[in-house]
Image (cartoon, rainbow, N blue to C red):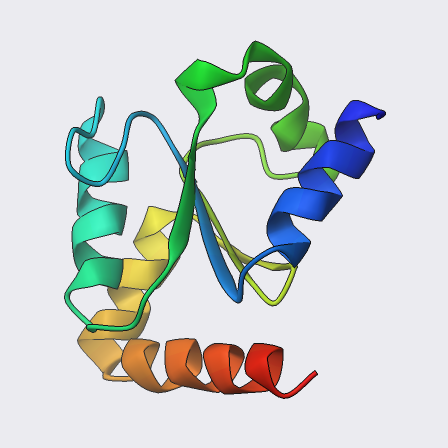
Length: 109
């Protein structure tokens, strides 16, 4: 399977997907740690991909949606952005509702 098809399959596999350095339990950079903590604080489930476990994903994900940095967060296969955007959404009080909406939409496909 082509790498872009593999990435597409990953973002299609769950309503919320976080591409990060490390795991939510053992993040390997501060930005990934904050993104995972912010998502987890909502209580809404999310999937993650540790980019260090797949060099092809790490090298090609920036070109997938033209977003050069990590972490990257997808809701229903659409790029939301990076950790700063998620933190901003949380501060504005919109993150949990957006995550729940993404989950509901995904489950009602």
